[in-house]
Image (cartoon, rainbow, N blue to C red; front, side):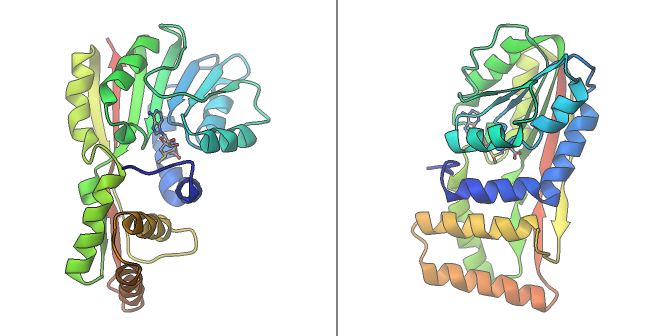
Length: 258
Ligand SMILES: C[S@@+](CC[C@H](N)C(=O)[O-])C[C@H]1O[C@@H](n2cnc3c(N)ncnc32)[C@H](O)[C@@H]1O
């Protein structure tokens, strides 16, 4: 069972997208994509569309931005965010079935979405199909084995982290992507670390939202409310004592269709 982005977790995901973690990824993608005025670009698993407005400004009124996501709640939010932009088109569909024409996109991008798709190969086939020859693909996915809180009692901490493994289908997608892209004719495959560490939590900290996401998910995996509140209390105490930590290791994979 994965995360249901139509539920309350979708709200937390959107808060996360607005935090410094979201901004850093968007900046990395925008500087990696060599965007030209008039380009057509798709963001696969666009969520609430935080990247779409930046892409829309970069391609200008002669360009087109597609935001694809199967979640109605996310697409509704993206439509609200992008209402002012005539060059953004939202597609409420799965990544393996965009219904776009072949060779129509100059670039395709995706942020923390492909790891949620159980069979990711048809989604990559579809991205390859809709990209023009020479088109760029830039993906950001998290190395979930390194997505970790520090400061709570070790056994309980591990229990909560273990339960979170079920939240997505691929724990370490960036390790598999280079081979998958090579096999589809992509060239120049490069990896870039977007890893970060947090030792203090302000009001808009990704660690704070992540803690809630993990806590909510642990409940659905049969961990007791008591254990979850112990874990949260221990993290809070660790922070007060200056021994709290959170690490995340997103990887940006970029490649060009040969
Ligand atoms: C963690 S969110 C990331 C959203 C956005 N890219 C961001 O960075 O804020 C993951 C998104 O992947 C979407 N998703 C899940 N399954 C998908 C699929 N089969 N095809 C495309 N997107 C999918 C979810 O609906 C959700 O909006």
